[in-house]
Image (cartoon, rainbow, N blue to C red; front, side):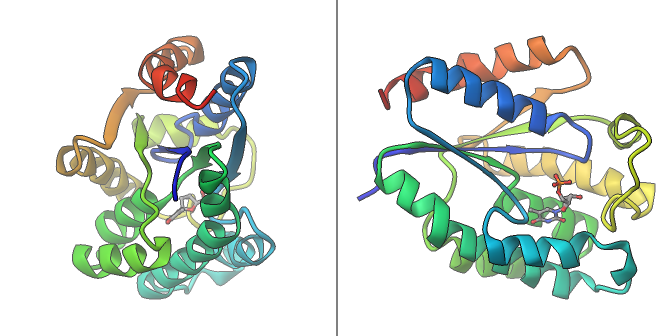
Length: 209
Ligand code: TMP
């Protein structure tokens, strides 16, 4: 029986998800709530191995279908090994990317069929959809520039037009799933972004105490 609360952070590369996840973790811990944080792709030994393949620039030839199945495989392992047990134990689960990244990147970015990717991923998550998803919205040029001097991974190396479709894809997903997805403008100070997220998350987090 599921008792916890599941929050995912989504958005184009460089939107500041990792920073906001750390802020959420700190706020939840301060509120005395048991919390588990994880990320995709990865979050398990198997998932981290899959992540290595997906992000390694030497595998430039991975086609969108293979990509989608590898992301779904990493997700299936994460759900069974980490997310479901934590939710069953009544914990707050914070995940850096989840199912909506596959829709934004592999469907809107990569051109795969929406229903195919959605159904594949519904099977992968085994009924475990997020309770709340915050989409951190940022122009891809701004997001990719924020990465600074770090070497671009295989996804970040895709053309700007791909990343623009991804950004638009996230916004379309927010229209399609308005109950679950909330868009938060991310091109502003991290404090402001967090205040907006926390305003909506705090009551659900407090309920887990
Ligand atoms: P990260 O840089 O946020 O750790 O994410 C890794 C990259 O993988 C990022 O460019 C987004 C991409 N991605 C997908 O294309 N599909 C997915 O389902 C997930 C979870 C990530």
